[in-house]
Image (cartoon, rainbow, N blue to C red):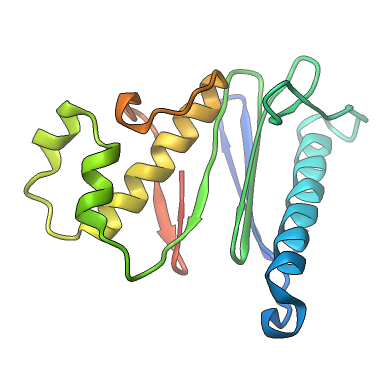
Amino acid sequence: MNDCKITTCKSTLAFVCRIPAEDELQTGITETKNREKTFAKSLLEYAVREFSSGNTVGIEKNLFGAPTADDLYLSLSHTRFYSFAAVSLSPVGCDAEYVLEGRNFEKLLQRIMTENEKSTYESIIDKKTLFYKLWTAKEASFKRKTVPPFIPNAIETDGVKVFIEDDCCFA
């Protein structure tokens, strides 16, 4: 996998890879999304092989559509330009979101924050960055637990690492 960043932490291996560019205007939205999904699936398969020292491990989907494998915990995310895959011996979750402009971030934040977060984050000026960091952290926390439903304003994000690079937020 070219143009990837690899992170290891305890018993976890995570890959963030840039999806090879293709002209979106010529391929269209549906084809672009399908390409993202295909690339993300290949990245997860690669991550599992690397984690398992080249051994073949079957990846399936659970009842909720999340990737699973025997004796491993998996998480996968993709967004415009990037795929993010994580493999671990303990529950793991990852999320990637392309940072967009033109949203009412104040309103979105009020819908996704817990009461504790509302009191902590009121003074932060950059609501767009806060929204994306909080949203990706909540998605990653949810994926780590893998039990629907996803209720953002009920999910605490303590301990989730978040970073922004090239207009994309990762957790």
